[in-house]
Image (cartoon, rainbow, N blue to C red; front, side, top):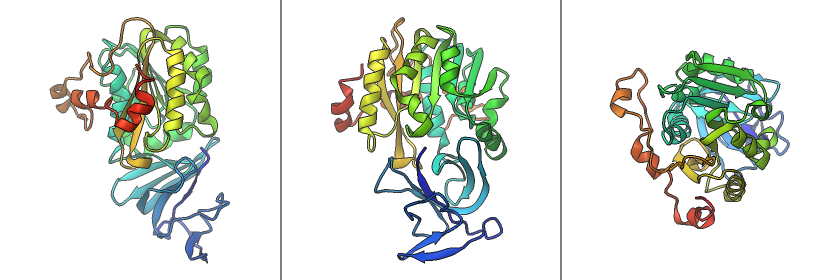
Length: 334
């Protein structure tokens, strides 16, 4: 993920500050090691996302203290305590989740596909090293096997340490963790293995680019049974309509069942929303807009971890597109 970000902590015991004034902007020499453009936050003590994926804008969170900083074989990993959204997980300068709003993403990317088919039994998660999707898949009692392929073991370890309510998904006995490349894992999967595949990917820059291209979708289709479903992260209609149009076109060429775009609100994601592509293979028809396998709300409200965001009404509403998006991609989806 090619991106630039800035963090300046007010906790001097955790992070040495060496500020210099550069063109009237406060620049921290410790946190801008990889910043070739001199971009930084104007406000000390705040984290700001700055990326070519959303030029001309940035979302900022006030930092109370930095809890973890490390570099894995694949990316920079950071966790900080924010003033308003709890703990925040950041990979290569991009917010992946916050304690406050992670439910809007994790619950929707999971239950939109799994509530649309009867009795899913075998589920594959690509990415999702924080464990949140696993936590949500585990709510479905029909599921017998949950495979997850995450490339970065540091993400798993950090999530278990700092986000136990998210990473609790790893504790389920049905979960089989594979550390490695998701594309390679899919290619090795036997044809028709899974009822559902959930792709919790980062943005299509760098290594994640493969997860948005036609060969990857073809590998997913092969791994799914007839009438099986896939749900993959599919960017923002406010920022990435060209990317979404390409994804829809690739999916229509690959999946012979249903192809749909849905979305949810996530305040700490760029533009405040994120989309999903939901597709099915040729077989039993899948009507994503009207769930046939609803989660019993009363049952789960009594559970230790009740649903915070998803319900059957919001499931159907997620497929309603604003007019500008409907004109662009509505006719391309089915």
